[in-house]
Amino acid sequence: MLIVADENIPLLDSFFDDIGEVRRVSGRGMSPEDVQDADVLLVRSVTRVDRDLLEGSRVKFVGTATIGTDHVDVPWLESRGIAFCAAPGCNANSVAEYVLSVVSLHIEKKGLKDWADLSVGIVGAGNVGSELARKLDWLDCTVKLCDPPRAALEGEEGFVSLDEALACDVITLHTPLTRDGEHATYHLLGAGRLQALRADQLLINSGRGEVVDCRALLDRLDEANPPTVVLDVWEQEPRISPELVDRVWIATPHIAGYSLEGKVQGTEMIYQGLCRFLGLPVRKKAGQFLPEPALSKLSFTSAASEWSATTVAMRSCYDPRMDDSRLRLTMDREARERGGAFDRLRRDYPVRREFSSVKIQLKGTSKSLQDTFRALGFKLKI
Ligand SMILES: NC(=O)C1=CN([C@@H]2O[C@H](COP(=O)(O)OP(=O)(O)OC[C@H]3O[C@@H](n4cnc5c(N)ncnc54)[C@H](O)[C@@H]3O)[C@@H](O)[C@H]2O)C=CC1
Ligand SMILES: O=C(O)C(=O)[C@H](O)COP(=O)(O)O
Image (cartoon, rainbow, N blue to C red; front, top):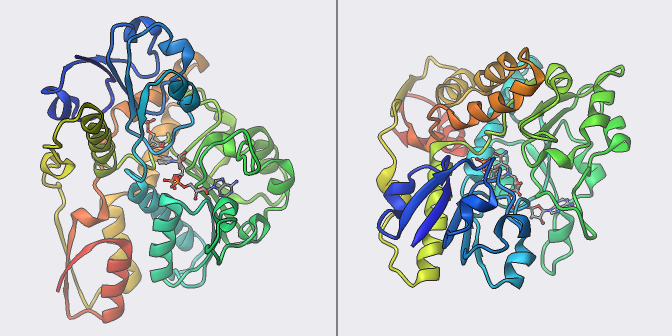
């Protein structure tokens, strides 16, 4: 059996080499010739999987090691009897930690040292939005969830309108990219809604670039009193707008979901999907391939303030400003080289471990500090 796979999927051999021969190809540049003789195709989000790629091939199973599926023409796969599997939720915690890290920097920038004063509007309350809401709730933020498709379901309640979510101190977008239907998200935030944002607000997009009209955003950021904006996702990746990078506060190259745990869980989920499809037993688990983290323990005493202890711990695991600096450094290249540089930042992404990989040892500290660490997802050793 021939398995053609995006070379950027981690642990391809560990998971798949006893199922078939694995051929690695570039995800971004994948062509019909690459997949023609494949039985199985494994991709990430940068490969458009549709008739143009697969017509005439013998592919019978497609797996994407990502949450998002907007790059896959699922109805066409169904029409051809090609099985499909994605990895829902695989990197949801990674994205939630990205947003928490950004919000903690924002709180400091505003001269505050507490989560509790903040209202956060979460647009899209699925795996990512719900995980983020759970953590922010524990941190005593006021959380408002906007999810019209869920709100329309029987028994679902407590959701707010988009306008109410967009009035919060922090707005964070976690919808899929959809172009059709009642709840389409393409350019959900267009000129009108961007116009209404205030200078004291923070807008974070780590969903999909096209959910925000980036041309309109650029215009808004050139006007008086613009909001603060953080973008992980962009229209026209990998050839993103340098003008927009220049105007946003934090700019990262679509890596919110790039914790090692998130990426490896993505591979694990398509491995499980392929095993189900082939009727094979599932013998491997993501956990067996995760190395010991470089940072496995941190200690704090009662001398440390709650804010400094938790932000030191968070930033020891992940600081979005590092990703921001790396992306900005690529912006002075020639236009034709910038797309390649964006993809290389993603391909060569440093190992980033989730908060749960670090044990926090606390000596003589308060119950409230313990609760905050727990809310953020750290393991405690008291
Ligand atoms: N930046 C990154 O690295 C990553 C980005 N993503 C993106 O985040 C998206 C969300 O991920 P999950 O939460 O796991 O997906 P999910 O499918 O679990 O949840 C999406 C939620 O959005 C809601 N939704 C749909 N249309 C909406 C609308 N018009 N307004 C408000 N809510 C709407 C759905 O009802 C659903 O509850 C993915 O589709 C993907 O595009 C996901 C992982 C990593
Ligand atoms: O899971 C998703 O959805 C994502 O956006 C991925 O984290 C993006 O990673 P790549 O598929 O582009 O490597």
